[in-house]
Image (cartoon, chains in turn cyan, blue):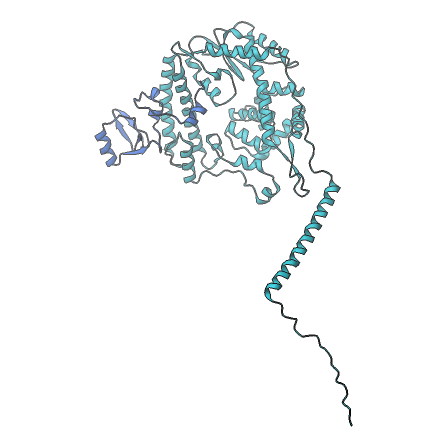
Length: 440
Length: 82
């Protein structure tokens, strides 16, 4: 008998994988992804901690700002000034109602002429020239609202640079209209109208606030800061009643900065500076004004596009940014102590941002805080100059502004010398030039 | 709402020359004449929101009997503080 051999049984692995239901497959994939993400996150955190440990703490301790040098003043100076300001307020400025009305009527006719002149060109069609919104709409409709300032690029936004240029490119009111460069004659006409309008608005408020005794009382006359209202008040001095005179301290901001920084280079007058900058023997008024504004901007610590904006606002001229940079560098070389003062002071206004993240931690310059600090500190010192001068002539002062005084009566001999002496005692080492001029 | 009257074209009223776009001082013409001039397109009537009357804004200087106030922002910026 044949015996059948035992059959050989071979188990082959299945050609297809066992079927897994789709829900289970999804759960498995999600689990794998979660594990990968957790591992990746842990690795990134480890690397970040490692780099943070290598680089040290990202936040830098901010420098502690020391107070600026203070003038030599009597202990009760603040009380003296408060009492003087109260006297100035109570005394008031003597003004003639008739002269105010007569000058106002004359200026109103001039305003109508300027309104007509601004509308006559018809390159930009205006509705209401007294309203900024209406003027803005008119310029936009005529396609004349663009500025020549280069736009901020996306790469600059990403790097966090060019903010000052973006600020300088904006047109936010009448004071910025000079940047609209397409229609220069229209812009000049609008400015002529606007100035006449502002002057009349101030004149009308003077008339309304004039007391029955013919005296004008306002807190503006008690240490008013340099601004539109104080400068337009000068245009109504012709309406003063009785003899008056002005006392002006020449270049007070320069003297304060020179005293703060021990700057020994003497101040170059704007006319002389204009001769140098423009290579001319008889500079124009616009060139002199530009040099004066440039110097003020330099003293206020403005640089780059902030300086361009400031000088443009004062002079209403579109200046090449590159030229301004060169002139500013020239000033920094001429007055090294003042330039160094601003450079050092700027170091106190760098602040750390993004602390705790090694990828985002960096330092930025807080421009707004720096300029606010400078404005406040220099404003206080300017107020000191004005207050010292006012105290020296206490009896007759009827208005005290930060850069000039208005006094009643006739000037006494050697008044300028008396004020200079008082100022030189407070600001040791500085020789102030004081001008006394009768108001006509 | 107050209205501001603006002249279209050149006109002479009471011996005074007015140019295109000039404001007509308030109460210069009788109401019927104003209506007739508006119909003839010699005058344009605008709301004071669109164009404020300079004569009313500076009434003490323009000798206008009607008055119009500056905005609060303008008062704060341009007028003398009390």
